[in-house]
Amino acid sequence: MSIAAVFSDFGGKINSVDFHRTEDLLVTASEEDSVRFYNIATATLLKTTHHKKHGADRICFTHHPSSVICSSTHNLDESLRYLSMFDNRCLRYFKGHKEKCVQTFLVLFD
Image (cartoon, rainbow, N blue to C red; front, side, top):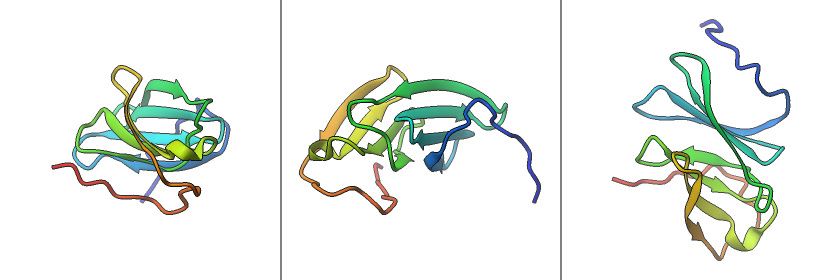
């Protein structure tokens, strides 16, 4: 194995990453409360979204290449958010979890 590409657009700490299971996509959540969406085939940043109100900690893709589930770091009453990266919108809040998510979660949408 060797390094194929380096994403140098961000110098901060990455909280979590996830690769899409069928597409050449990567999503990252960072300590600066941003979510970055990359095309790994071309090593390009496709979109950056900022989540200052809730924060961005653990992240993973769902069934659709432009949808992700992200855990909060600030407002833990709405600890999981279902986000559309296509139009930068929260599709749904999953409320009730009062503690910080420390495990990576798996979401099955089929």
